[in-house]
Length: 217
Image (cartoon, rainbow, N blue to C red; front, side):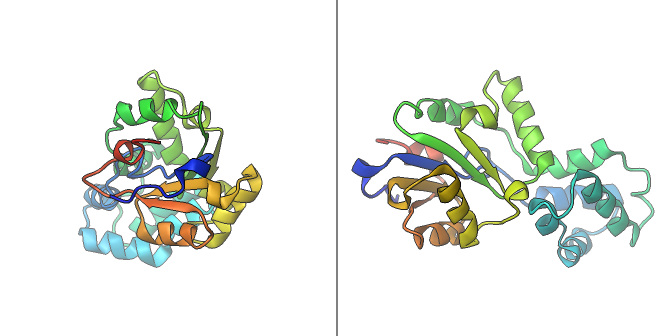
């Protein structure tokens, strides 16, 4: 396990969302849209990549309404099954990426503000954020916006990790010193990019969880 270097100067913690705070299954939306459209998963995956829907949505190029319209149109090219899909059907399939949220991770993060400034940095979409906040409220927990001093969503800043610009944006906007800041993410490319800016980047890898990486912090 990679422990944080220079803990004595650590003042700020930045967390990724997926597979750090909430477990995710990246394959689930494709699988569910394939079932809804009665198409092979490989066909749906190819269409998804061809149209770059995730990239457009997660950078705010398209909004919720346009995303849903693109999903309907994209799958209609192969089948008529998507014609009458309600917004809720598309949102539900899209949100299957989100698995059960372990409340103990939230509880651990809630213990940290007395010692550190806390931030969230996530490549994500509005539909996912609304669902995570709905789950948190159902658990009588604070929303993401309440849990962190500030949240940085890719669709709002119109940048995606691992672009160096997104990390620099967070540092500038929050007034953070890179060397005094730790960043927790499950993606190796994201960790590498953050580290190259001098951020204390920590690669969260199973079977360990964020709780393990926060021990001693």
